[in-house]
Image (tube, rainbow, N blue to C red; front, side):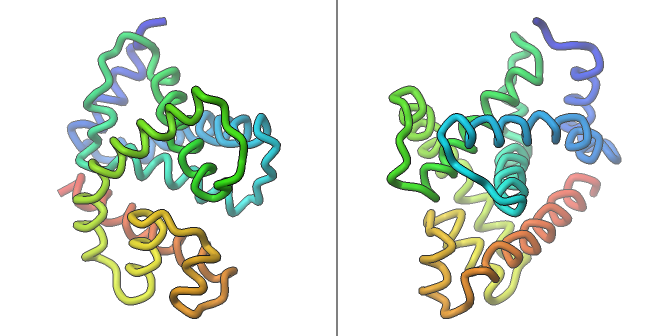
Length: 189
């Protein structure tokens, strides 16, 4: 299935930083991303909390906006945008599940996708995340750095920073919201 006119227009609006384009994009594809998260976890026998689902969805959308929407700029339109985003979402989710559960069994294809996506994404994300981290302070910046750049688990971050493990997820969510707000204001400027 080719790129629909509705998705082409939405993609163009995002790439040219039109007002409300990113919000419309998230509204349109949030259900798809959550479905990919739930399906990927369920097919591997992994139970996710609502916070885990929210964190994974934020990871997927963050991977889309880094480097000025580099993921969307690479889209060639040879499939539907939903199909393309399903592949991107699955790669991000599998990579994150692998980080969170290093002993979880993944298929060879999953491991290949996770390794490839992880290497590509870390190279692309590093500069963008470093730039975005400048907008955060103190423990928020440190938690984002440890989680996204060093691949540390909540437990490892808790031990390294001496803060309760159940504070890591909410702090990451707040930091991501600030990062998204920074990205949104930068794209509207």
